Image (tube, rainbow, N blue to C red; front, top):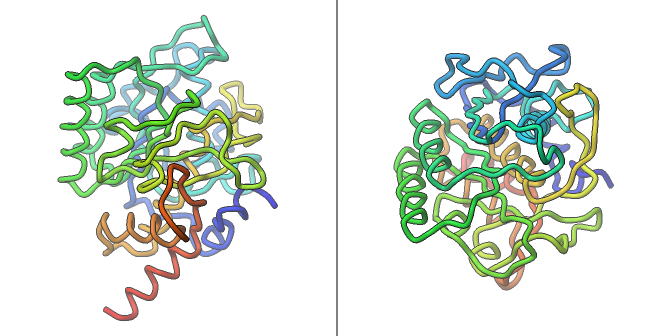
Length: 293
């Protein structure tokens, strides 16, 4: 079973590529679109859609490689090597990872202050949905407060934040994983089991989802397909599912969408391990709600 079938995304992708009115904010590294034939025309780079960052300054950097790969899972053209989950939606790229040629294979990180600022900027620029495949420097209590306020702002604007749980093999929670507007994401293997590296916790189990996070193929900044793994790679599967659902149900609130995705996948008691994403069950739940309205 391939990654898209595992989380019932293939069926949803058969009926929609997404709508440009649904704006997905990608807070990550910059995106290098070497081959324009690979990419949707709906990728917009720059904090407010004004092409402030037209490309990567250092395509070989970890920041550019990570941002490009994550973007390809969402916004490559259908029929390419990447999943290309929601190429019809608008992808608004707000780069926060610094570009450096050192540590090319490492996970790029940003400060909590940078992330908090980017969340507010991206939501103010019109994003309905945030993909946060980010690594953070250890946040202080002040940093946690900044992130809390930024996510509060996103929630007030009716946005959903899809957040990587992290790859530190820890049990616990953070401001990012326990905020009511957040959907934390844990990576899973080809059998649907959580990967050993994924962070788990009660808030992650209660609010979150599992999604494919091993041997996922996307595009590197050199324009060639490559495979990566981790919770940051699993996160776009949930983001893409939410984007397609919102495209099909444009009048649904963020609460409606979030509830459908979280609850349609949940069976049995809540624990530290979240359920596997079931995108088609969420679609059927929203369809039933729409028919009864």
